[in-house]
Amino acid sequence: MRAKTRSALKTAGIVLLAILLALIALYIAVPVKAMADFYADLDEQKERISSLKENPPAPIDEQAIAGFDLSRASEIKFNEIQFIISHNSYKKNISDLNYILLSPFTGVKPSRYEHDFILNQLNDGARGVELDIQYVNKRFLVFHIAVKDSRTHCPSWELAVEELKIWSDANPNHLPICVLVEIKAENLPIEVYKRLDQTIESVFGRDKLITPSLLMGENETLRSVADKNDWVTLDKVLGKAMFILHPCDGTDKYIEADPTMRSQVMVPMFAAAELQSENPKHSDYYLLLKNDDPDPEKIQPLVNSGFMVRTRMDEPLIYSEERKRQAIASGAQIISADYQKGVVYPKVGYISELAEGKTVILRRP
Image (cartoon, rainbow, N blue to C red; front, side):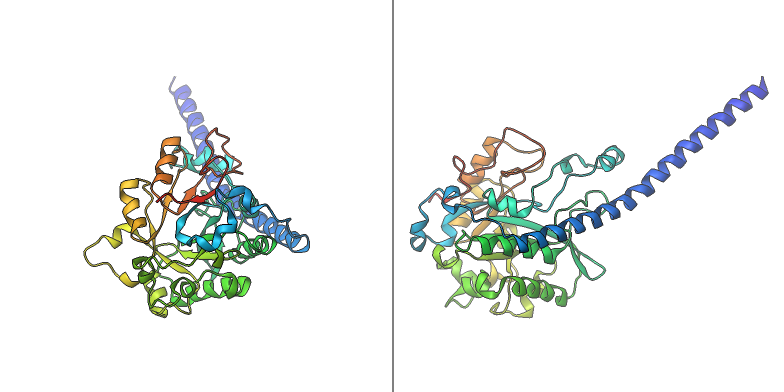
């Protein structure tokens, strides 16, 4: 009897050890596969950009996505329009293996979606994208979260900027596009931010960019543009892109590198809550504000004070016609969406548009 018990315990131990070893092997395989997938994504991006350079995309009908007559562009200020930009615009769906292995332990369910290529999103009406910048081995990479959610259409930051430029060149009078640059790494030296600026300027050329200097015009500060509602008219920014520095720990360094902002490429964005603090830092630079809560009572006063505000129409697993209505009614000019036209997964009845197929409209007073 004892021999049978010992044999049974030994068998159970072997089975448990085998299961443990199998799990260890799987969790070792996950980062290995993530690395292989990343380089496959990079090869795909290189091939796509090379093909686009040889065969530029056909222009689209910009009027078809606008809810107003574009011939009136000289009468409309830049901050008087609302437009959709995509959120996590580079994203591919989390892999089935990662989902199965990680879902019991981490909140990966919101990562079960993906976007189309950036160029296709722009063709479908998005007038902006968000790129999450990871700084790895002195390289700028674009992905969401290492290993867990790292599949991406845009592994190379430089090639992502080139894709935007290729589309812009094919549509020389397009409505302005906004590129939200979110730096995920912390404590980076100012030289890193300068390299980002250099990439943008070398690819686009300064004449194709909506820089702090262009927005300031004759004003001494960015804040005075808001205070006087002295925004540039829409005709002056057609065919251009505005790269926005998402709030991060490097904002101070970026501003301090040139307090006049005349040489800078990216326009800094600040959390709306910082503006309302007792002693906000860098108050001369508050022009673009971030408020992810689309509550009109919180955003309308900011918009009415001359600021441009970014809010979110939806989030993964959080989307409704009511939230969309609130985002539009808030007057926020930059409205982020995870479910913009052209989204690949999941397929839902909800459509992130501003008005009957339009993705750019005039902001209601």
